[in-house]
Image (cartoon, rainbow, N blue to C red; front, side):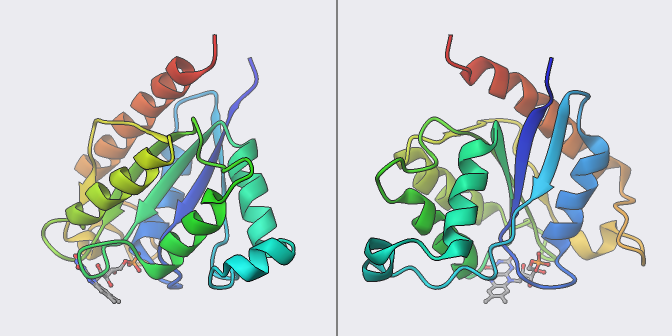
Length: 185
Ligand SMILES: Cc1cc2nc3c(=O)[nH]c(=O)nc-3n(C[C@H](O)[C@H](O)[C@H](O)COP(=O)(O)O)c2cc1C
């Protein structure tokens, strides 16, 4: 059977992003039969319906095509002021406009990482609310919050915390089952 194609989206644009490090670690932790490529969202202009109506700028068009082509979307998101980063919300907004809004029936898994103790938990509930009303199917459990995240990677950016590796492995295994379950019969 062909690999399930996962699109990884990181809500942080920061070079040293902990969320991006964790997303990259997912490449090693994926069950067999899944592979991931990473989206770039930092070059997508701020959403403007006038611009959308004139014709999609290339970065927004690319992002929409990548989500559409993916069997599943894996989002690693920081919590900014108890919610999403502007960059992630902006990308979602570009994807969300008809025709063919790209999150319709899309299997999605989310996790968050933060240097704080709660691991950015609050952003996940906003993400679920936003993606759910777009008919994206967000994996309900397991929930993964990587708290005190800075201490969980070594100097080379490798995820060294065994408990976190297990949480992410379980999330990805559950995501694979979720994608299969969501496939049209
Ligand atoms: C604008 C802004 C708002 C933030 N708000 C929160 C917050 O509400 N909760 C939290 O846990 N961390 C918050 N932080 C700290 C981020 O969790 C921290 O910068 C984290 O490293 C961002 O993720 P990244 O490492 O993937 O870039 C905020 C950071 C910024 C820049």
